Length: 337
Length: 263
Picture 1 (spheres, chains in turn red, yellow):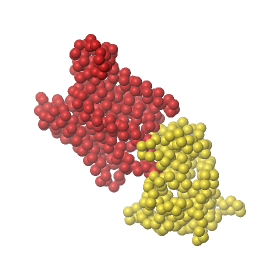
Picture 2 (cartoon, rainbow over the protein chains, first blue to last red):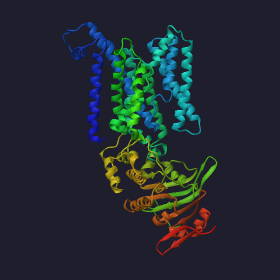
Picture 3 (tube, rainbow over the protein chains, first blue to last red):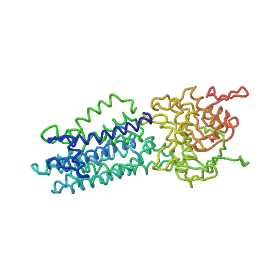
Picture 4 (cartoon, rainbow over the protein chains, first blue to last red):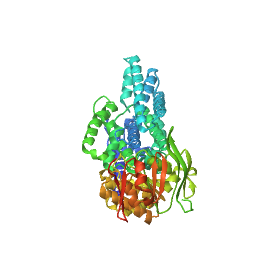
């Protein structure tokens, strides 16, 4: 894609983000017209005569807006995280969960739920164990003689398996009538109970991480050439990798803490973005952020309005993601051969 | 060797070892501006290791490497990469970047951690592509190129670094006869036009004979001979280096190295 065509494309994507956000506020079991939604939003900041039911205000402002924004934030974090990891590991099939952050966070959440903790503590616990899992992966990989990205991915697999077993253990001892459904539901991902406070806690971590990743994104091109060539090009690959993995892990761990484990987003969205703007991370990262936000908001809209009961997000992203990814593989194999 | 002459790359008593396995022994050599220096030696003689020590991807055990009088030890990785650019022997593409995007990566040494290439960098990349005649394929994914084109792209990336010293690790390893001479000819021209100092390793001593100003024979990490191609690339020296009979055929001006007959 030519440079001149990238900025309009990105602009279009952000218009898409706003449009989907607006649609998310309208859609649901209690449909609201876009006009009313806009009036409700504006009335927060400007004096307008209120012609709508207070319930409408609550639904838009307290329920749907934080939830849609959380979906956008998680989608942006997971998609850009996938794009970063794929660049770092020179492999388009790597997801942001590859270093074990999701299993680690799942274990923390499961333990917190077992102990009867509230939402905030569950999130904090999920974040902490997610970070511990990635640190452990790092240590295991470093202990080997061959300190490479392959060692890191293998160590991530080992640590992820360990924490998966621990999660299974937590599920085994959980009370099957009360705690077990909670743990299972958390592990499948949901934004149903997101409140402003949860969203703000996530925003203050994820936004700076996304900003820093955006600023450093050109270096991903250099790192994707391999360590030796990156060194020849004057880069310190070890150090840059630590920084980028740190930022990505932070954003991913907070996302998982907020929404539970939502798979496939970090794989499908960067791939989609690469198909539109090409592999250059100067374009890929901003495009992944925007497309990730759109994708996750749409998934969440489907999750809450398709059936009477909420569908867990992880189930939807899997059902949508696997076929989409299979299709992308067929169509654009030349994309990364 | 004794008389002082202006050298760009000055290597003194360089030694390197992987763990206990010593790879380079007390290497001393100097290469001047506009000079093409070829390192000739059998597999595992330490040719690539020597290049990596010069660009400081590997840190020598002993000795010093000076570029323009500056000890590399006193320079940061970024500063080294502004003085020394290198073209790897093989390259595995991970993503289908465009040719221009790959060449642009050569600008990295001139960019801070948070900055991105600007118009000036794009101009430098385009100049490098012009110089090697690959401007026409600038928008092509570099994964779809022939071996010769890929080699030129990586060479253009190194040129975009605007370093004074250019290192090439077996630049013709994957090339056919025509591309081999095309690439080596371009390298020769670059040394003269851009005033570069080129150090390259070669498989085939004929490449050194035809394109180098100076040749070093490397055997088991020791520089066994150093001088002009005609001085160094003799049947005797090469026979000892490769452990096989070798003949140098000559028509007076040109010399061709061939495997000798018999054992």
